[in-house]
Image 1 (spheres, rainbow, N blue to C red):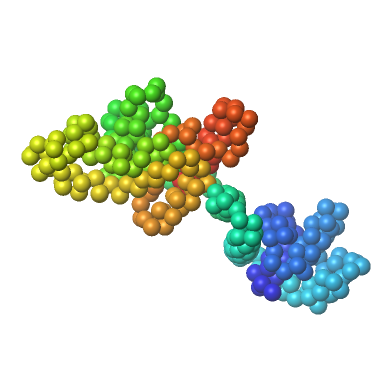
Image 2 (image 1 turned 90 degrees about the vertical axis):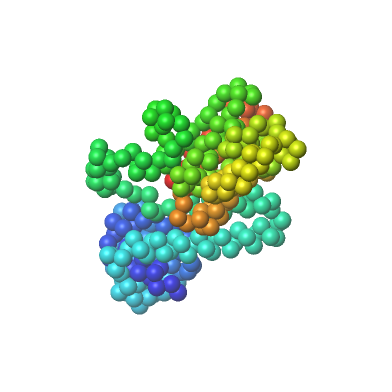
Amino acid sequence: MSIAEKAFLGSMMKAEYLLHDTVIQPEQLESTRHQEIMRRMLELNQAGKNIDLITFTTLPDLESLGGMSYLSALLSFADLERFDGMEKLILDLWKEREKRSILTIAAMNDWEIAKVITELDKINQLKMDDHTSLQQALVDIYEAPWEDRISLKSATTGINQLDEITGGFQCGEVTILAARPSMGKTDVMLHFAKMAGWAGFLPLVFSLEMPEKLITSRLMASTGGFNRAKMRDPKRMLNENQKNKWSDVIGNLSETHMQIFDGAGQTIAEMRAKTRKLMSQFPYKKPILFIDYLTLIQSGQAYGGNSHLQVTEISKSLKTLAKDFD
């Protein structure tokens, strides 16, 4: 049986306040005996009783919990200083077991991939490292008045006046660009994406309407200063100067490391999975996501055709995604 679980239970027997502080639930322990011991601890605590060895001796089914010898052994494993580490380890092991269980159930019931990703994401969202003391936060911004703005981890929009107003794209934020049809939203987005790429970020473009070939063609036209109409037949329509410039434009664009996903009806869960995969492939680059466009994202529910509720759900999910991946 897991030593971490023994130390976890022993620590709570030694310092009862830890039972109130822990994020671990009994069912997240691997050993059924340990699950039962923790449930008893919670019951005793709710009844206003201590959860020490003396109280345990009063339980009628003490032997099913391992008897006094087992409970005494648990107490000897107590290690208050390493309690946080034990919690994290127990939670990580539980996540692994849950993941295997979900994949088994998914295979048996032939789940769609989107459902599998959603279920796996639910496990992954359980976090223990979301704490920052205000003291630490203040230390982090102490030098702000003397630091160049560019060093504060925001991605430039590539438009100076817009950067001055917004401070660029900030970590953990969602920015929505809105305009009427055919006003150039996609071109503006692609401009943002390539500028962020050249600044060292990893632009992930989720194009739910426009195919990758058309996006690439637009990027080439805007970067090379080619007339977009001429991109339909470059061999016949580009002049000699433009053809000589072609390979330089390709070289410049490849340096953005832009990634394009052009599947229609992608869900937030799928975007999360793709983002996580790319983050592991480019560990030293911060991702910045561009989605074209909001109402084409497939929501989890139909909401009886109520588009307001759908957009609300999608916006909320995007904010969670931005926060989780910073």
